Amino acid sequence: MPGGAGSEGPPGFPLRSGPGASGRGTTVGLFGERHTFLGGLGPGDREALTGLGTRHAYPPYGSVVAEGDRSTFAVVLLSGWCTVWTPTERGGRLILALRRAGEVIGDMAALDGRPRSASVSTLGQVTGLVVPGERFRRFLASRPHANALMMNQFAERLRSADHERRALASMTVLQRLAERLVELADRTGSPENAAVTIRLPLAQHELAASVGSTREAVAKALRLLREQGLVRTGPGTLAVADLDPLRLLAAGRPHRTET
Image (cartoon, rainbow, N blue to C red; front, side):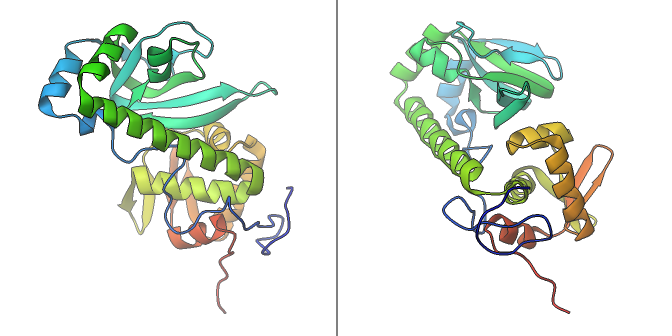
């Protein structure tokens, strides 16, 4: 695995420290905003927005929007999870973001009318409110609070994208995976049997796509983390046994067990 100068990590996984490394607590990443657009709306704004669209049910692992498409509708997620992704030159996928209930997808095309910048697919069953682009623009123009929420969403997503670019340039696969596991545990995890179980249907190849790596490299990193007792994996399950060492790994400061 390629590495760079910095702290010595576990065998085969040299660590790097620098501006791309994360400190304690992940503030940006796949998820972007902590508070959703729909959750931030008042009752009147929420009712007005609901009246502008139609509910639509999307099947598991189905397409919501496709990169390059000229459609301009926005989708407010009412339930479920989606991945935002773009194809790689090798025919794989790079997962850019995860979106949950309450967030808006397709908002950029709805606002500027340009082709879709990425594809969005469902993770499991998803229900969304489909709002035509023109109606969505009028809604934001007439509702200052909703417009401010959308601007805040854009700002947080931009910060998240900047962080991910730095991570790809300056962090090893193990560091990026450690940071991603911490983020997933913080956002979707639930305590079970002295560990934090990640409640998100991400397959291993999707986890690899979320850190910009190959399935083989991520499988190797997961095996190392299992051997150190930091994570537990099983059919359709992923649990983090100890978050603090993962935070140290992500920050380029390897955890060492005292003997």
